[in-house]
Length: 410
Image (cartoon, rainbow, N blue to C red; front, side):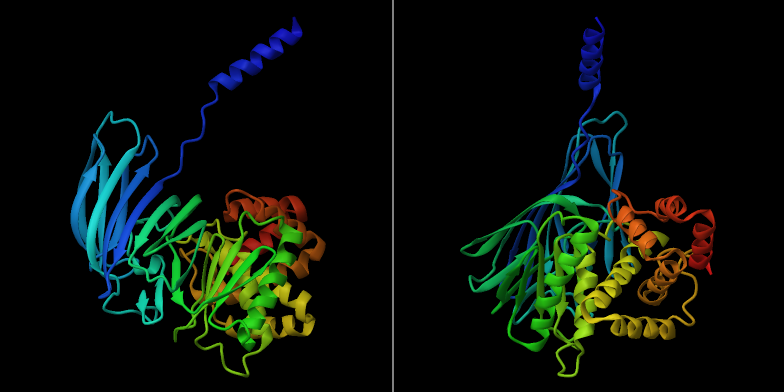
């Protein structure tokens, strides 16, 4: 009788459990012509129960049509200048009682290159570099809407080498991209002359794999991937890394995807430690990526990745190199101001002061406790300062947690 009751209870629990709703999904169709004009057809499917959603799109695109699911309407469209200039914010709302997924289809066209390129033009003589900063697809107005993706892009010459997330399939004149995991972006590099190197956990692309800079990136991308996986656990997907040519040296990372720039880093005196730190920082984002990009919690993305990179440099190149980096950060962060308490931290707070606070926390609680803390946090499904403080309290005590929280706000 007891076994029967246990079986019935399990059956009832199974029957009552509802599957988690599917995440937002983008079906994106894009075509590029030789002049750099984009024509796009994007269908966004939002989970049932969505009552309202806002999207941002650059004003350089002209909206040619809007189609929505029954019970959904385009409630407003207004120009905005945040988080960058020259945007339109589209707000969609569901009618009372509407059920089922909210579906939004936007058709638009315009130049893929903005008038002011900020040093990173989407279309250049060597090919394409696309990412969220170009506001070329409907971006969730919170800048943190994560979605799965099916994309088909046409107008890509056969000699372009495509680097993107997920499953990438070239067609005679384009590419298909399928991403079954969520991210905030539709990033892609499609450039001529890229060569490919492969290492466990990493695929690396550059114009010349034999250059001094490429050799540094290849060596330390593989080394950092091994180092972090030994501590944090396996990566969810292979990380694809591309080195592109542009003057602006900005790098960026998405889930399983990183782009570096040769500009500013190809000088013969550029140190190996710089490339090692840079590669390790971007690889670390395979784990440090989950905190909100528009709140105080963003230090758990950039400061944590930078701290992890310093630890990798110490392991790969020795403690003197790591200490030199720490000393440079102390100088740069002298007047940084608080990391938390004012919204998203600025660059000095994220990349200089935040990592320093983590180095000082390690000195306070000891490396074994710090490693337990960072490993536990890296494996959390959500990253917030509150969760970090809870783990720190559990591992090192309330006094250490209180001191670290004061440091974040000081």
